[in-house]
Image (cartoon, rainbow, N blue to C red):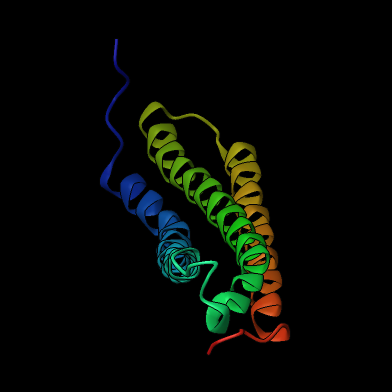
Length: 144
C-alpha cells in the first residue's frame, strides 16, 4: 500500500533542497562539455600527426608529440570519468530527496554521503584536468 502523498509544503521543501545539487549537476555538465572538447582537440591532433609519412623528413619530427598527446588524452579521459561519477551521485541525491519525501523516510545521512562522494569526484576530476593543462602548457607543441 502506498503512503499518503507528500503535501505541497513537503514537496516545496524537497524542491528547495534539490536546488543546490541541481546547480552542481549543471556545473558538472558544462565541465564535461569542456573536457570532451579538449579530448576532441587532442584526438584530432593525434590523427593529424599519425597521417604524416615517415618519409616526410620535414614534418616527421612532429610525431615526437604523440606520447605527450596520449598522456593528455588519458588524463582527460580520467577527468571525464570522475565528472560522470560525480554527476551520477548528485543525480541520485536528487532522486533520493524526492523518494524519501514520498515515503516519509529520513535521508539526511545518505544524502550527505552521496553529496560528499559527488564533490570528491568533482575534485579528482579537477585535479586531472589541472595536470593535463599543465602538461599542455609546460611542454611546447611542436607545430610546424
